[in-house]
Length: 307
Image (tube, rainbow, N blue to C red; front, top):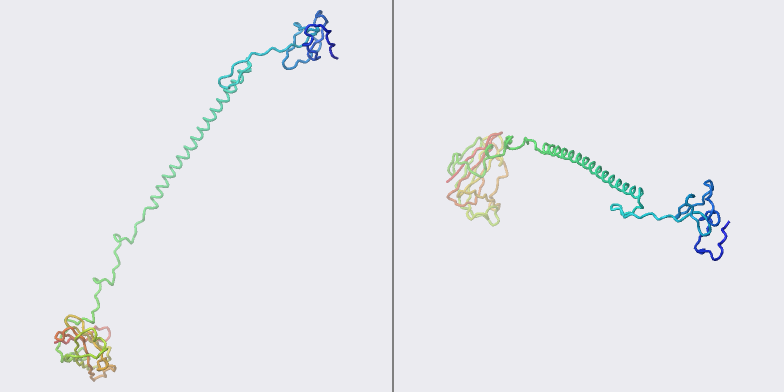
């Protein structure tokens, strides 16, 4: 049901609301008493406030009902939150909530930092202890054990080949100075072997003779070997060497002049004669030595002939 429009000519009739939910029926002309309290109250929407029955508001049509809501005073913005409040308990609640959040966040950060400090401090202490223990272990492990083979702790084994501990073998190319020397042409004996070296004579080797290229002077002499034993005497039973001018003389083999080693052994009780040639430095300074091998482990016997 809608309210009938006011008659033409009523004051401000164009500005009066005609919505049924914003008016409250009442006695026409503004008279009479308000409705009883048990009567239903029209709904009140945003931006309006209900008019109490003891202070009714009458519009131009004699209707009582809702009046526009009064504006609440505005408050300045909060210095911390930056939000303005509508006053009263509403603004204070927002401030306390923001402060509480900030305080809680600060406490949480402090707790986290403290926990990290203790945790990292514990790990750091353990690592230092472990490192120190590891260093001690490494020192113990890297300490070299005493080497039993060091020169200070061991005596080197005797070297049987050192000159101080062994007697060098006699050089067969060096005549024995202690051997009894005989003159050329005389006989000398060693066991069952008798040897005679004749006097040296000048010798001219043939071209191509072995050993003749190393010297400019050569000599030759006859050698006679007598076997006084019971077994044949081979050429390996003795050997001849010579020295001239303090140097070893070079033995010359000249097959064109029958200057060679004998090929047949000396039978028991018989003799054998052949020629021996030498390249010498000085024919007047010549010594010939014969080394006769002994039986078994006996050392050779040396016989020497000289000028």
